[in-house]
Image (cartoon, rainbow over the protein chains, first blue to last red):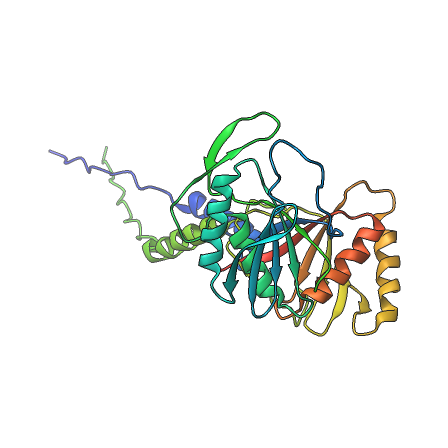
Length: 165
Length: 146
């Protein structure tokens, strides 16, 4: 009796390999080995305070930044709210979280750095002003137009610069 | 009638290629590339002598006019060398070039790529000059390192 050979079908991987190979070339061409992101800002402004008397006093958050530290000022008169030493950005973040909780409708901050202040350090200050860093806390934000309340990690997203000190 | 039985020639086994290792490498490479794929349409060719600042921002950039300033204060607009910020007289050259770039375009955004060692004074000068041309929104291009 003739034995029938059981021919197991062999999988042809060549087309799959071709597809993966082409795919890899596409991804290699589009790969960026530095992760690039953006930090947004508006044009530099002259320092002005809103002197109109509203029911609710505007926050007018202003950060004066130099090599010695950061002075946080608020209110129509630019009253000093807090001072933070250079490098204590987590402390600055906590102060801004506190301010955001008291003024959930506010989302702007005016930065006044010294002309010789380092750009890298300034970016770190902006990061700590725009959102909660190194913490799992959340803050509420109220949209001033729709009055819609949301919770998130955003603090003062609209950063403006003033001419350096 | 004599039956002749033609002897079946045994087929010589073809060359068998074991591609398991190759597949392993390709799968790992594929996973790595998928992980590093960036959905942003912003592509920047960084000039020499420019190191991006580190940031915790994770907002993806968008294509726009790109102004690069390296640590020697040389200004490049869309990878074309335009001015040397060490000479105050060359700010006019920078503004003129930027004005030509702006002509006929409504977009008010400019991507600023500054070397991390520069000072705020340089940044402020560039922003003021750009603002005079009509750019009111600035995107600082940074690298996500922390």
